[in-house]
Amino acid sequence: MTTNSEQTQGENLVEEVRSELVEIDAMQINDHGDRYEQLHQKLSTALSSIDGL
Image 1 (cartoon, helix red, strand yellow):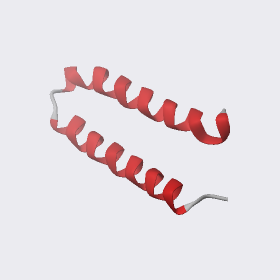
Image 2 (cartoon, rainbow, N blue to C red; image 1 turned 180 degrees about the vertical axis):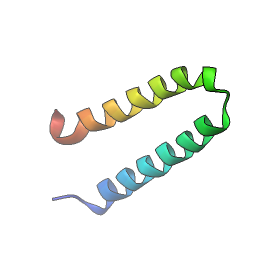
Image 3 (cartoon, rainbow, N blue to C red; image 1 turned 30 degrees about the vertical axis):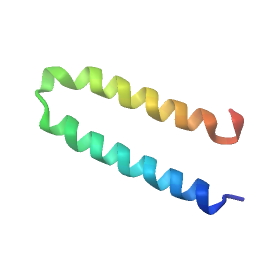
Image 4 (tube, helix red, strand yellow; image 1 turned 90 degrees about the horizontal axis):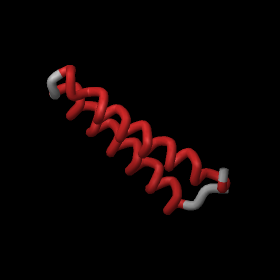
């Protein structure tokens, strides 16, 4: 069962990722790779924390 706090954290993460994707879209294409890697790390960390995986 998820708590309201966990749901809010998840929603905040989604908004952060969405904002980062908008920022990446506005960048020069040759700068995308580094930002995508940073975003990938952020998402991997978030997914790893779910159920202690």
